Structure formats: structure tokens, C-alpha cells
Image 1 (cartoon, rainbow, N blue to C red):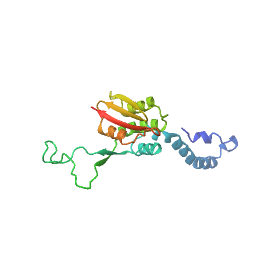
Image 2 (image 1 turned 30 degrees about the vertical axis):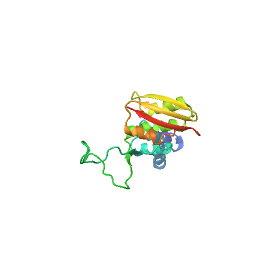
Image 3 (image 1 turned 135 degrees about the vertical axis):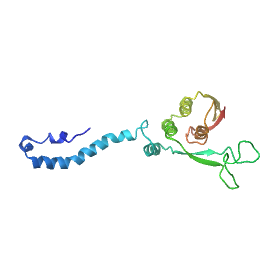
Image 4 (image 1 turned 90 degrees about the horizontal axis):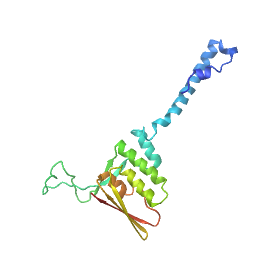
Length: 189
């Protein structure tokens, strides 16, 4: 952390007794000291572990991960089914989208950014892809099985995976797809 005394101590003994000179130097240098301190502390605001809100959005922008995720609508309003009455389902009309957009909370977004960073550094190997899927499922104890075919790979993820995480994986927000290889994901609860 820079301090004003770091610079005023550099004044030679010839001018150290001149109070107006010292005051002028202090007034001139204070802005630079403030700028140095801001520059030295700015990285902590964008540290992935400490960032929140708009700082986390900036980190996500840098790595190519949006906070907004498209989710499929599974439950629609219905009079015929129990548990899907008023205030319990989404109204649907012809022409409405079959998906909704949700905004990730900071913790889930941070997890998604970590996985996206790994995707950006991914070497195209199967073990690395499995590691990325394990990270995005956040150690929930899911089992990942892989079936390799000719120019295709199928991932079966067994366990309790949230709808948001399923959407992140299936909708291609994590591009785990080597060139020329078709990749499919299935989930078993």
C-alpha cells in the first residue's frame, strides 16, 4: 500500500525545511498515491473467489460465460392435473417459447465460470471432459459413464442433478465437443 510519506521522504534535505514546497509536493503527489492504491487493490475485486454481482459478471464476460441460462419449461398450467393449478405452472399459448431464461445466483454462476475456464483450456481429451462435468455437478456424487462410438461420444450422468446444471450441460454452454465428434448427454435420476 503506497503512502504519501513514500514520496515526501525523497525530498532532499535542502528543501525539506521549506514547508510550502513540501505542501506543494504533498498536494501534487496525493492523487498518484490514491491511484497506485486503487490499482493495487483492483485485482481483488475481480478475483473469482471474492467477486460478487457486477464484478462476477465482468469475469464471466471475460471468459465467455453469461449469467442468463435458457431452461426448458417442464410444468405448464393445467386444470386436469393435481399440483399444477393456479400459481403452480406456466401459462402457454400457441407461439410462446418452450424455454424460459433464468439468471444464475452468484454461487452457481461462480461454479459455471470455473467450468467455462476449464472448457476454454480443454485439450479435447475424454478424461478432461469428465473432469469438467464433475466440476459443474459440484461433487454431488453423480456417476458419469461414457460410451465411445465411431465419431461419437455419449455421456450418461447418473444422480441428482439440478435442472439448471442439466441445461448448462445439454444446451452447449460448456462446449465439450471436439471437431467432427457428435456428443450426447443423458441424465438418469
